[in-house]
Length: 317
Ligand SMILES: Cc1ncc(C[n+]2csc(CCOP(=O)(O)OP(=O)(O)O)c2C)c(N)n1
Ligand code: SF4
Ligand SMILES: [Mg+2]
Image (cartoon, rainbow, N blue to C red; front, side):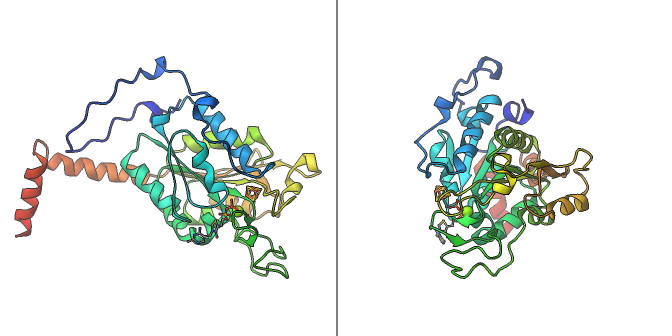
């Protein structure tokens, strides 16, 4: 189990601390079962790929013995973004495209939590495109899993930034004319320090990617293909061996620290590769801010909150 799950001290500060409720030592506590972590019955269409991502998230929580008070599940708006409703733990179904800034606040103020963000391609790359770039470049510790179905599902079939050319939708009746973005290239270029690709049709692989992403100290991004059976059926058949497609993993000799090699992999035509394309260690914003806080807190050690405020006011006179 990663240290971040169990050994991170409570947030330091000048605020009077409230005694924490008695929680058994980690080794004495059992991991949650799916029954304890599953909330409402998911309202997705039967056969939607999102079911599989949710089931694997439950599996991850079970396997890695995470507890309710250590997990936060955040999302924006969309079918995929309904995710936090179905998880019996802290979380938020937030504003369309704004899941990442909300999750950033959680991550920076509560470094002891595992922050997971789920959402769709529209949420991530249309309305939330700007936040995606900035959260990645800041290297804020969290795992962002984009359930990419190449369409706006919730609003019933509009072209999304990942829809391929020619895709017929309510916003492109004669076929999409705008070039799609490549989420993997975008993540690498924006500065994400962990970039992986998987597909809902390969459960073991999804779990493997989620585990690796969770263990990464920084902003980890996963593009998970997740079929919308209602508005883009068969979109990913070419990546599914059960439908006559091929599931090709990242070559064994791929150097995950080589940005250009990762970019090259990301450029392979669909169905492309699956696995970890890029992974480097860089100081996180969390670590940098913690350092600043430590230095500043040392300067006011032993002072009461009102004394710090008074000192500040006096300085402003
Ligand atoms: C500010 C704002 N603009 C537009 C919408 C309408 N809207 C809701 S979800 C969505 C797109 C969802 O697509 P995606 O993120 O790909 O999720 P999916 O439903 O495909 O999982 C849009 C445009 C909204 N809720 N809020
Ligand atoms: S509309 Fe598509 S994405 Fe939304 S729940 Fe149905 S199958 Fe899933
Ligand atoms: Mg979508």
